Image (cartoon, rainbow, N blue to C red; front, side):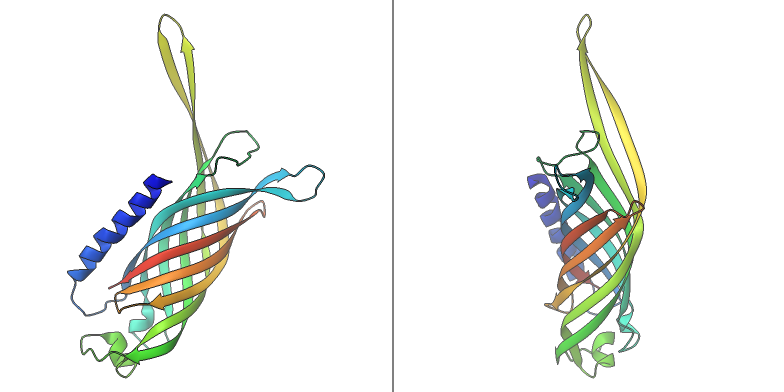
Length: 220
């Protein structure tokens, strides 16, 4: 977990340095490091209960997107592609008894509803010109996600035969996933936004994952 947090902070630092080198003109693109906390349906029934056991995952990743609000005041639609890695908690249970590491690849489309505008007179900014010298400070958003999940694990088998040998067995399983999500965004500066969101992700077995996602969006 500490390694994931370090990678997340390093990614934020690099992107901030990069964004400061760009011109003030907004071009609609953005990069977004993300941190996720997930509650996943394990598919295993609890004893003396009709409900399934819930597994816990935490992880991080990166999204790249494009915001169409630079073209028109009411074209507040953005699309993005994200990769997220999820690491299992120690107390999780699995059908095969082996801890799974999860990777997700998702394409998403969101609609943003902006409110609470402040003055932002910037002749190089499309957002400023479209909004009569103002820019939004907050927004709520909702969207649809679709993509794939890859579950992986490695088993190390050690045995002694005239010395110590070790073999590894690799497992990879992919599945189609889709979901719905929404959240609240705080547009701290014209270049930096902070997102707090929730989404529900479903797979082909109609098992649901509940995600809480925090991210920093660097707008260009």
